[in-house]
Image (cartoon, rainbow, N blue to C red; front, side, top):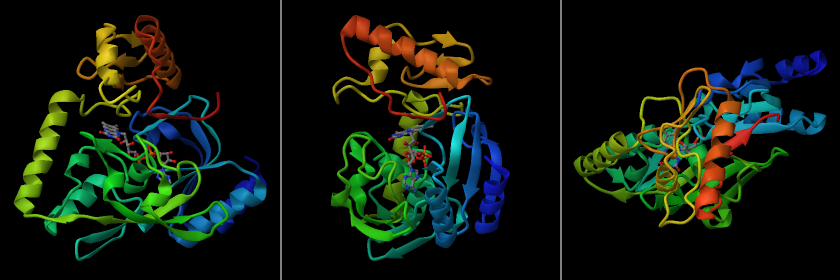
Length: 302
Ligand SMILES: Cc1cc2nc3c(=O)[nH]c(=O)nc-3n(C[C@H](O)[C@H](O)[C@H](O)COP(=O)(O)OP(=O)(O)OC[C@H]3O[C@@H](n4cnc5c(N)ncnc54)[C@H](O)[C@@H]3O)c2cc1C
C-alpha cells in the first residue's frame, strides 16, 4: 500500500490501524500472511470512515469477526481487513429480547443471557466466533442454527448507510446468509425463551461435554473444513471412511478425533492445508462420487 494511502487511513481512522499485519495473529488456525492494512474501528463513525475510504480509493475491504472460520493464504490479503472490536460488544435486554453488538463472543452472549434466565442458544455454546460471524455464516450445531433465534439486524452498507433488516430478509440456508460479503452487521436482536438459569446451564454443559468428546479442543483449527454433503452424510464420517484420519501434509494434520477438522501442528502453511483439502476432496470424489464443498472461507492472494 502506498505511503500516501497509509497516511490518509491514519488521519481518518481513530481506532487501531496496522500495516502488513500477519493474519496468523487473528485466525484460530494461526495461519495467514499479512494484510496490507488491518483496522479495528472504534465506533460506527470510524467504521463508516474506513468503508468510505475503501470505496473512494477502490481498495478491497473485508470484514472479519474472530477469524474462526477462515483460512488466509500465505501471501496474505491485498487491501484492508476490518475487525470489529470493543466498540461493537454492547448488550441490552428487554423482556425476552436481547440486542447485542456484532463483535460480542457468542459464548459470552449465551452466558449473559443465561444469567438473566434467557435460554434457547445453548446449542451454540462451543462455537468460538462472534455474533456477527455466527449470523453471516448461519452458524449452528445439532440441527439448530442462529437464524432460528434471530429477529433483526442493523447493518451498514459499503456506502456507509445504516439499515435495519428482518431475519426473513436474509434468506438463511445451511451455513448461508444473503449478507455474507456485502453489508456489515453492527448489532442483532434475538428472541430468547424464559427458563431457569440452572436448566440453561445444564443444557450448556451437555453440549460442551459432547464437544469435548468429539472435537479436538485446544488445538489450532478452524472447525469443520467441509460442509456436510447432506444432513444424513456428515463430511467427517465420509473422510474417516476414506482412512484419512491422521493424514499429514507439512504442518497440517487430519484430526484423529474428528476427521472433518484439520489441525495446524504449529508451523503449518495455508498451502499445506489447501493441499490436504485437495487430497481429501479427490479421495472422496474417487470413492463415493460426492463433491465436498469447503465450509471454511479461503481468503487472500493466490
Ligand atoms: C473449534 C471450532 C468449532 C467450531 N464449531 C462450529 C459449529 O459447531 N458450528 C458452526 O456453524 N461453526 C463452527 N465453527 C466455525 C466458526 O466458529 C463459525 O463459523 C463462527 O460463527 C464464525 O464467527 P467468526 O466471528 O469467527 O467469523 P469469521 O471467521 O471472522 O468470519 C466468517 C464470515 O463472517 C463474516 N463476518 C464476520 N463478522 C461479520 C459482521 N459483523 N458483519 C458481516 N459479516 C461478518 C466474515 O466476513 C466471513 O465471511 C467452529 C470453529 C472452531 C475453530
